[in-house]
Length: 206
Image (cartoon, rainbow, N blue to C red; front, side, top):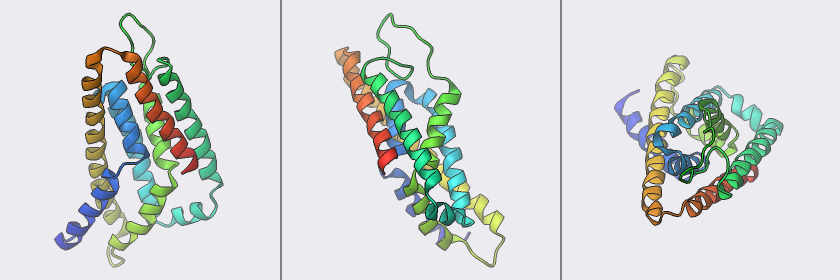
C-alpha cells in the first residue's frame, strides 16, 4: 500500500473502531469488573472475529450472508441472550463477572468463556459486516495479489481495533477506581450489569 492510500485507510478504520459500539462497551464493562489484564482474553476472541469478518467481507462472502440472514438471527439472539444473562447476574452481584465483595469466593470466568464472548459479539454484529462490505473493497487494488493485500489491511485493522479496545477497557478500570472509593461493590456491579444487558439487547436487536 502506498502512503496516500494508508493516509485515508488508517483514519477511516480508526474512526470506525473508536466509535462506541457493542465490542467497545463490552471491553469497558469487563475492564470495570475483571480488569484490563483478564479482559485481554475477550479481546483475543473479538480480534479473531473481526479478522474473520474482514476477510470474508473482502472476498464477497458477507454479501451472501447478508442476503440470507438466518445465521445472523441465530447468533444475534443466542449471543444477545447470553450477554444479557451475564448482565443480570452482575446486576445481582452474582456470577463469574461480578466484582467480588470482601470474603466472597467463586471461580472466575475462564479464558475460553471470555474469548467466546468477544468472538460471538464480533461475528454476530451485522453492522460490522456492513461496514467492512462498504469500506474494505475500495482499498483493494485488483491488479495486485489479493492475499497479500488482505494480510496487510487486516493486520492494520486488528492493530487499530486492539488499541481502541485497550482504551475502553482502561476507561472502565479508571471508572471502577473512582466509583469504588465509596466502597459500594453492589453499585458497581449494577452499573456494569446494566451495561452488559445493554450490549446483549443491542446485539439481539441491532
